[in-house]
Length: 388
Image (cartoon, rainbow, N blue to C red; front, top):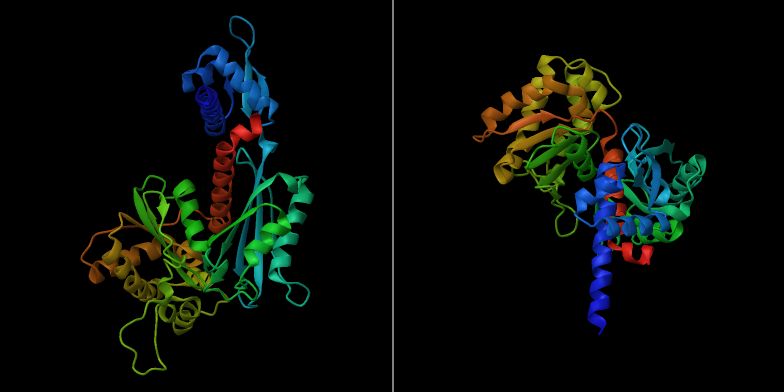
């Protein structure tokens, strides 16, 4: 006797999930629009919309006008039903101190607020700084912290969820075991962590040059190095979250046990600044150095980049490689062309190379995209509990 009731609940949940998904994907829809998209009957569509509206997940956003018959109500997802927050953690060039980028999005994907914060370790810890930055941003734009459904951190390292530890990171305090759980309890919401370059790849797929790619690799050049591997829309993170730490790739056999050169030593931030100095360029950051670079320096830098790129192409044979980070942005098409020329002599495989299509903070935007996707999926998964 329980089976029909259970089946009815399951069917109702499926109908509501489908309707909410269409409202999130398509924006404003009339009852008839939704009925055509879902294939539901008129009474069922009306009941589904009533439940979503009563639960605060949908709102009447307006009415049609100008056509024959009565005006129809236009429904939309309620933007204030849930919020997502992105936090990018990065080192400030020259100071060694981290800076935080914070952005808040409503359920429809509209960015409600965005700020930058410097972290002073004389007065706070990185955990306290992240908590304060999130709560202050929410207070400034009038978002109740109780409606935060996800905070996504983008970090210059790799996160191992098994030990709740961020590895391969130089920001003081960020590698402390249990930090993520502590933040989740303090903010009273779920907190996700991902490598900054992985999140840049999320943004590149959604907003940049990789939008139509089946799979691609993103090479990040800045103060540090990174590689993101997108396989059909899924990021390869590795067993402990360390996939893509290409900067640690050794270059040949070390001349002695104390000298173990790796890719950081030839295309990391300090190496780019040193190369620029050889070409008579003084700059504070790798990006500034590349902006001033002439053809000779770009060709020399491209030869170095081609070493790492050859390894990526040989192992993955990606359809597309994206050059990103501040060096990729600053070098633009001139650097891309130089890398293409250098790669032709370093690898027998013909791979398309492109410059990132995101001039903004790709890590922060990718973290926001990832957080919002998780919020929407979580709402749809738990829709039955919200509408019963």
